[in-house]
Image 1 (cartoon, rainbow, N blue to C red):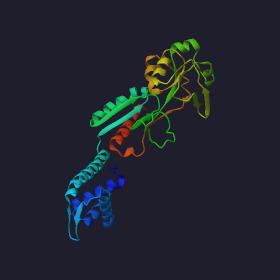
Image 2: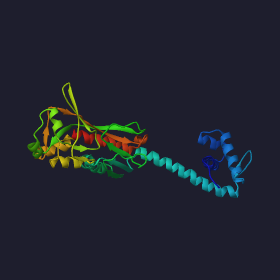
Image 3: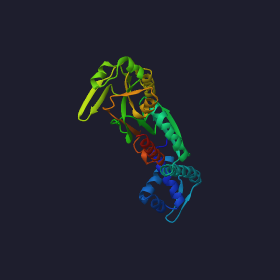
Image 4: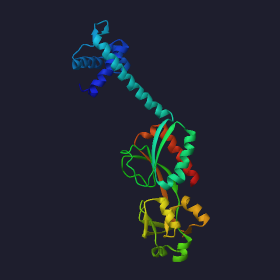
Length: 298
């Protein structure tokens, strides 16, 4: 026999009638009318083709069949109640699993170290972390949180801004020794670029009220930010990279910054998540924690 959602509702109502001892008490406990309770009981007995309760104007009692059926209905009602309690607990307590995805380079440099600290604070939160520069399908892949370096498209998802990162133009000293160091935006047209396929193919520069835009092209392209930086260090051209990536390499001399008196467009980093999930404490805690960690890097 197929069980409909309506019948499941009737089974829960039936369990309440028995637990409360009367139709009136059951109606009060569930916040519905006595007529609705009576409707569900009659409909359930009609669907099953048996009498579940012996009832008079003064009392009711379970039939033998009703007794066995009640125990099953009581279990269903209990499990539904426990499911609701579990959800409420998840809303209030930092416990459970979080499935996270983020770009590889950002993940290795900032997100993974931050998550190590987060786990020490909240050891009951389990983490499933995927590092991937491709944009994941959050709903299809069951992802709780995606870190993305771009504004949220109109997708029905929700987003919270985590950070704004400054970027700069860099290349290897050997490359500039061979090709010359650009001193103005127009010089960039004569240079090769290490192209990052996950970003726009146009670089924007500004200096005061003046702005410049140029298309990038080169013989090396990659979809991985860490590989882009490695190709820059290898002398394959110029690239726009975040300052957190450039600074330590500039300090050790493997990269040089050029056109430092011009400002490159910033990178906006967002936490993206399915609608309605921010009410769960584990996710709220993680987003707030990441914001504080990103502040240390800016």
